[in-house]
Image 1 (cartoon, rainbow, N blue to C red):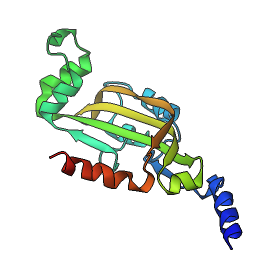
Image 2: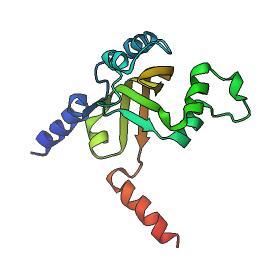
Image 3: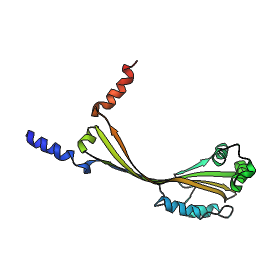
Length: 187
């Protein structure tokens, strides 16, 4: 009986396939950073309409991953350095700031990430050591629109994320209880 339990524990200890896998997907039409970047590159300031922008996959009225930036915040987004004179800024930024409430600024966020825990099932299960490999991409775009016409675009993000997150808890399943009581005991 004891030998069977020991064999089962040893077998499970090396079984990484029992560890959880998670993913988050906020790509809504873009399969990669590069595809989103290529779509935004097709936008031409003062020529691309809001309808054309939406056809490219940037849908400010329908997307769950878009923030409509209010006027005071849009000025901070478009011109974060107040020492730069207005006439030295990009024409689209300048026209949007001057238009005030008539210019809408949208911040788009597209991403795809997967998380896969690796390592020993028993160490992970009992919370002694958890290793998670995170990979994917994130794309952010800023778009200013006035009178149904795009005035300005900018983008950034991470074309590729790939890192390992490791958490070691010497006390295993008791770690969180000890940490929680640590604050109580120090007073």
